[in-house]
Image (cartoon, rainbow, N blue to C red; front, top):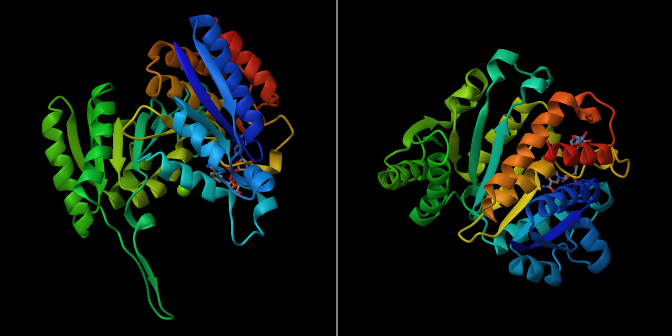
Length: 348
Ligand code: NAI
Ligand code: MG
């Protein structure tokens, strides 16, 4: 298969982890006879330094033409003093321009790494769910007002916005254990009542998937009490922002977790969930696994290469069992050593 992949290394550890993940993709191309081409572009702080704009026109045009986009991370103290332009604006503008309304985060615990979690091992053993967060609507994009003594943030959702993200979640659940949990606050919020009505309607098109509703406050508790219960979870932007950070704590290290942002078309944006980690940038010690697993998602969701995606997951699983590991996982290996080990594991 031929595919054109745009890479956006960005700032901090971004270039190191993207290089690692691209090497994994190149090895996959070799093993499975694919023709992947890579085109690198600027985003975030690096783009501000070079052009004054966190999302240069050239970058956006390249992304719009690509089959998939792989991002490292953006931001850092170097740009914190700027008041009129921020690195993060580049990422928000890109998600918006590509209309990526569904943020997908698989949360998976590894048997060999259970002791790293802040929860008891028996609670998180076997945790394997996918969180689907609505990404382009709700309070973060609503009308805002401010006077000296009052402030408002409008939460607006349309049926269409709820429907499209619900369908993504049902489709994922359909390929997995066929269990979807929709999170809302329908006992209090009108947008949540519309959310519940709409997703219940969409459910009729997926009769094999069991839909359950959970209120967001009790969900925050259930994720700690019985995380292994969940298969696919879907919710609105604000609730999703908070709950996905809670989910990240289940796995033990930020450095392990990948994400995909998807829209109606097959093009997606793939990135680890962590930031640019300026404290460890340039030292060849960042954990590249979150980015490597992001390319596994890229192969699966944008290119439909499921076997190749599974091969990467298996290679990572072997790595967690036999090492080497980076410092965040209790080891002392360099980023480049992890890359080599994963490449070796791809052949096992
Ligand atoms: P961060 O995720 O960059 O780092 C938090 C802690 O985790 C740090 O101690 C860091 O060294 C460690 N860490 C993160 N990724 C790691 C990895 N792959 N391997 C080993 N250790 C890792 O979050 P922080 O420090 O709050 O933000 C730093 C910068 O990143 C800020 O400018 C922030 O705005 C930006 N950021 C960017 C994101 C993005 O591009 N999507 C997301 C979150 C933050
Ligand atoms: Mg957040």
